[in-house]
Image (cartoon, rainbow, N blue to C red; front, side, top):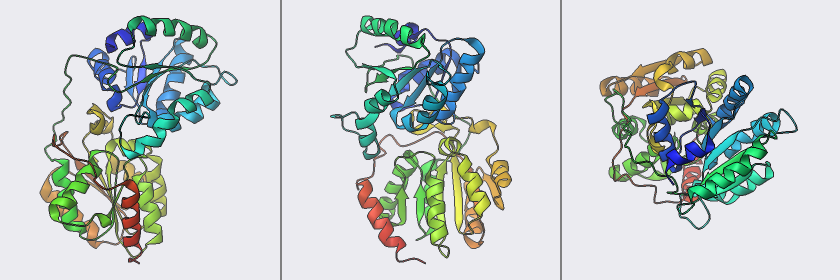
Length: 374
């Protein structure tokens, strides 16, 4: 189905969401049509954030907003759907467009398998009427379902279109770039050179994939790394939980701008606890690159100021490898919480692979290694 037709059928002029590779056609179309325009299209920090934002739009205009997300974000919408949108509370109508990763019978990464199994169940439990769009779903079928959905929306209830892999198409190419020069894969190699045998917790997406392949290229064990393949935005909290219980061991966290934005409250918790053994590295390419390159708001905020405001005693930003190496060495040799923001380009190898070990294997060898440390 052409995504332009889906947008026409839904008939809304306001979209907000978190980008998803399954919804790349929709995201690219919205960028081409609206760009980032607060009156028509906002890329939010997390799915709960955009659900509440959509509620505000409805309160101000009386019109029906659209929230788009990967199904992994269903957990983040449960609270606002149940306690804000629900017809037993404020009866605020929203159309959700949800990318169905991990659909049963379709091969996908391990972090998507269970979420894929419960995607429709969760929608049903939340009272969200839903319709699945496949490659062979006709425009007429979607129009007929949207007509049914309008009567549901008019009752202050929510509806969802669940999008199967490859169901939406969009012909024009949208290229996402920034002016940064550093390359994430090379940044990770520099981190490995300095961190040596210290444990690393890496964030969701291409950063973890590149870390895994960097270990292979270096002939190193994967036991040093916890790859947070799912649970976007929580790698720094995982690192904090480890650091508190391994106080004599330095813990490195390789994070991303989209992940930090998704659950930025974790920085306040880290800063308040001031673990002396965490080096928090935020690789900032100002984009959700792992799902297509759509922009985050990270080009317009100051992570260093935020970190300092949260209580990090050390926070710097670098945009070249010499400064990166110097700040990594300083962070390694001091016994204080440190944050290093690294300005990064939007780029990854086309042949970038995925971890060849299972998530369970990763956990077990990482835990075995932590047992040897104080």
